[in-house]
Amino acid sequence: MPRPPSAMRRQILGSALRLFAEHGFKGTSLHDIAVEARCSKASLLYHFAGKDAILTELLTPPAESLSAMVGELSVLEGGRAVEPAVTGYVGLAMRFHLEVKIIFAELPDMLGHPVLAVIPRAVDQLAAALAGRSEEPGARVRAQMVIGGVAVTVAADVDVEPDTMRAELVQGALRTLGHQTG
Image 1 (cartoon, rainbow, N blue to C red):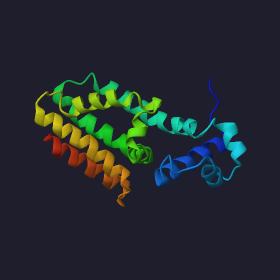
Image 2 (cartoon, one colour; image 1 turned 60 degrees about the horizontal axis):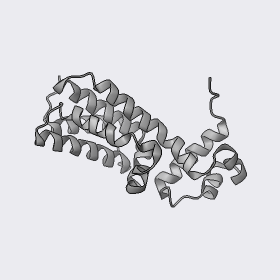
Image 3 (tube, rainbow, N blue to C red; image 1 turned 180 degrees about the horizontal axis):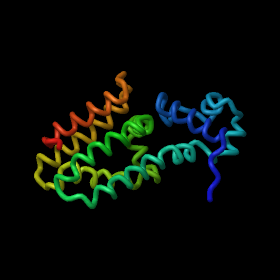
Image 4 (cartoon, one colour; image 1 turned 135 degrees about the horizontal axis):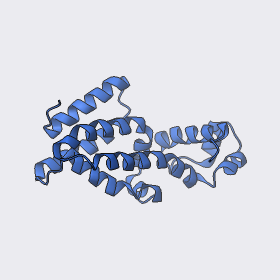
C-alpha cells in the first residue's frame, strides 16, 4: 500500500498548481515553486525530479477521472448518456478548474504530455455520450461546443459561486444539446 504524500509534497503541489495556473507552466520556475511552498529548491528536488514530474502528478488525477467517467458512460445507450455526461463533465471541469486552465494556457505543448495521452480518446467518447450516441452532424457539433464551452468557462475564473456555476453550466449544456431533462 503506497504511503500518503507528505505535507511538504502536498504543499509543493498546491504551490505549483497555483503558479502554473497563474503564470503558465513555462512561466514558472522551480525557484518560484520553492519560494511559494516555503522550502528550499533542494527540498523540492528531493520530492520531485523536476518541474515536469510535478506537472505529471498534477495532471494525472484529472486525466484518470475523465477516463473513469467515460468508462461509466460507455454502458449507457443513446440519449440516456447525455444528462450523466453533462453533469459528470461539468463536475470534473469544476473540480479540476486550475488544471484545465494550465492545459488551455499552453494547449499544444500540454496535449503532447504523456499523462494526457488518454485525453483525445476520452474526449471523443465524452462527445459521443454528449451527442446521445448520434452520428448526426448537428449533435456532434453541439457536443464539441459543450466540451469547449465548459472547459473555457471553468478556466476563465468567472466570479460566480460554485453551486451557481455548476447549475448554469449544466443547464446551458443541456440547452445547447437540445436535451430535455427528466
